[in-house]
Length: 68
Image (cartoon, rainbow, N blue to C red):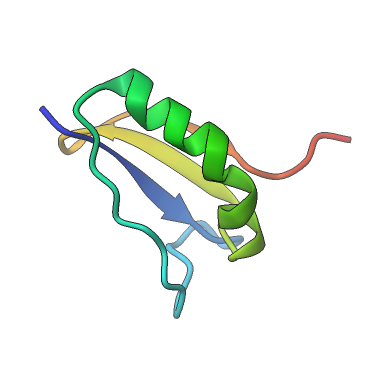
């Protein structure tokens, strides 16, 4: 099963008009490592929250917003 990320903007929907990567990974660890290396670029591109998917199933979601 392939692992991927779903991106959400401030209103909870996918960011409109963004050229976001549509990466697919063979393992959860690879997907999480990739996000660790690219989260700041995604946040700068308008992504506020991401969800990790295994196939079509959402495994978890998390914010890319800074914690005060």
